[in-house]
Amino acid sequence: MIAVRNLAFSYRSRNGAVPALADVAFEVDSGTICAVMGPSGCGKSTLISILAGLERPLSGTVSIAGLPVDPARQRIALVPQQYGLLPWKTVERNVLLGFTIRRGSSPGMDRNEAIERAGTIMEELGIESLKARYPASLSGGQRQRVALARAYAFDPDVLLFDEPFSALDAITREDMQGIFLRFWRRHPVTALFVTHSVSEAVSLASRIVVLTPGPAHVLRVEENPFFLQSEADRAGILDFEESLKNSMRGAAS
Amino acid sequence: MKKSRTRGLLFAFCLILAFWFVLSVIVARPVLPRPDKAIAFLAGRGGASLLPHLAVSLGRVAAGLGLSLLVGVPLGLAMGFSSKTDRLLSPLIYLTYPVPKIALLPVVMLLFGLGEGSKVVMIMMIVVFQVIVASRDSVREIDPEVIRTLRSIGAGRGQILVHAALPATAPKLLTAIRIGIGTSLSILFFTETYGTEYGMGFFVMDAWLRMSYVELYAGILALSITGFILFLCLDLLGTRLCPWVETPDF
Image (cartoon, rainbow over all chains, first blue to last red; front, side, top):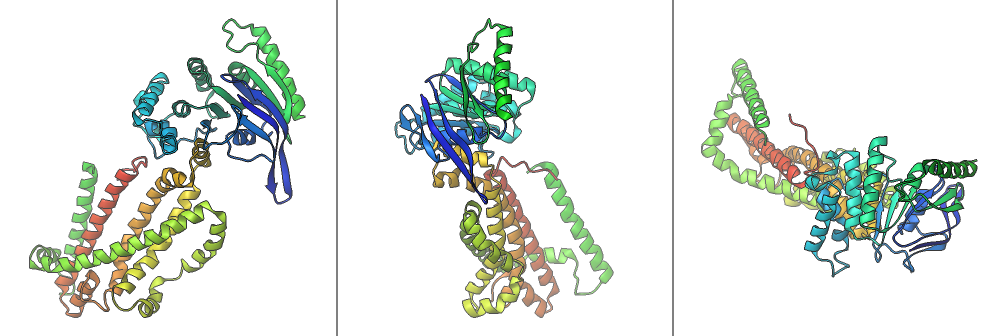
């Protein structure tokens, strides 16, 4: 479980501290997907950085499975907006990055096991044939799948996505959302993603947290009744989306 | 190496020789001998007598380049990673970079003597700036998302250096070395005219003083062939070390 309690964060600027987050609090249950939604510039990426242990909050706490967040001890897989693939590593080496970085501090990790796991994940995601290629030669959708494979190959405690599908065209985005959801159903991991897209949040998350801008705080936490519903009520989904959009509009104004 | 590229290089070499031949016929004076005479010198005993000179010069270039990398890469990486270090050292680099280093030769000779020290230090002083700037800029150009990804996995500074900074620096560093080799070979003409009886600079200048023009041109030809081979080796090293960099054919 991810527990965020009374989180506050400020950026330093020439004119003093600029508050970005104020008293943000919510929880993500183990093995579920949570979407954090809010208008652009409301502090979503800052929140992801704090959850990944890359920034220290001014006050408040973030814990993963009851322990304070620490990237050196926990397995946190972050997928940034542009995927963060290392251009000088092949697809396979990118996928194995988590193992490469942590093998020194995790003696139990076996190289052959890691390669086998990475191979299985790449096969499931349809990128096995790309393993010898470099990221520069891949399409946006392929890069996204490599980033997903890298995150899963790490056997993560939590998966964090920063606007994961925003760099893709509409069709690839829809395909990737489907691929992610099918993959997640086979390997359910506690996941959190930030997005400004209401339909993306409703398609992918079981819980939706709406943030208000400047400084961000939680406006609304909603359980998504339509999550993984194959026979979903179309009108109901539209109503739910509209209600979330209204919250966003209200928050932005 | 691709066949088309080999053909292109051979064509360029033949074109230069043809131009040299035509010019020597037009000038028709001993000061510009025909290329076949210089080639015959290199192919015969003269070539063997030139080898120790070449070896000494290459040793000096290697030492100068090695020292530049040893000093320049850590400095450049430190400047790239830390804005404080960059703010501290950048003015120093920008002020000293444009100074023609050859003008400092007398000072270098006084400080490091007339032996190997001053020759190697001169090469180092010229190449190190390119190495520093290439390393610093390469680190600055690393996608911040790459660093975020590495840190989120738990990578420490050493791992970020190994998995991000060094590979990101390699392509520009190879370019800096490529330029550095050309510059170093030119510098040898100044630094090998004193305190030594070995080196390509000494060989060429000695031939010139003796008015042995065939030897002089053979020395220049040997130097350009050596430079060419070094460039090809660097290209090969580049494709091995940086296979993710796409190089256009020519």
